[in-house]
Image 1 (cartoon, one colour):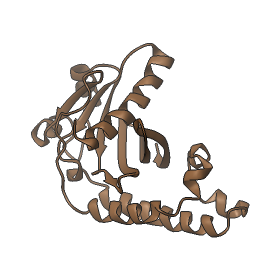
Image 2 (image 1 turned 90 degrees about the vertical axis):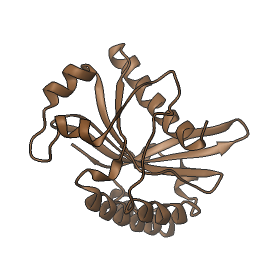
Image 3 (image 1 turned 60 degrees about the vertical axis):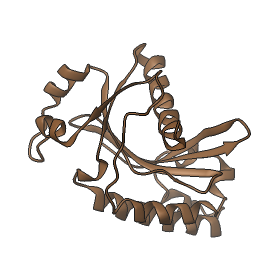
Image 4 (image 1 turned 180 degrees about the vertical axis):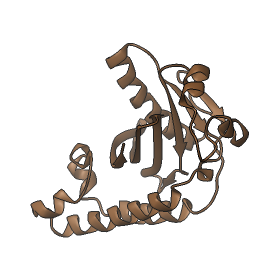
Length: 198
């Protein structure tokens, strides 16, 4: 399996575990086939750029509480070893560049996940840019379903990151930078840095 899909699947498995623990159900992940057609990419890029600058400031001022306060949601969940590792910075720069280009996602996720791929034509049936028919979306994909949008995975062979948005309904969603690292047994989830949540 392509390493990119091992990493995407690893993240969705973490999210699905939360569903199983809290509501005893699996989530259906409805993944956009062409992530960058959604509005908001420019805002996400701007937020990632701000966050990267905040992270760089943090590495120079690790004990400064005011600097820590700028770092946003779930920063505290990221391992300290990751926070201090400046080798993530070039990956973040590459992530920003990659998000300006369209890339396509295929349904090559692990078989233990419930994934549906959403083409642009299917997407416009539920979300036309002006109105959002979450009722029809949930009716078709199930009560516990999420609309997921992945950036490309950026990796140096030992570290990997991507940006992911998840929407659950009209007012529920988040935009996260997702971190993975590779050890002798393969790719491991390292945490998320949530840049926005609604």
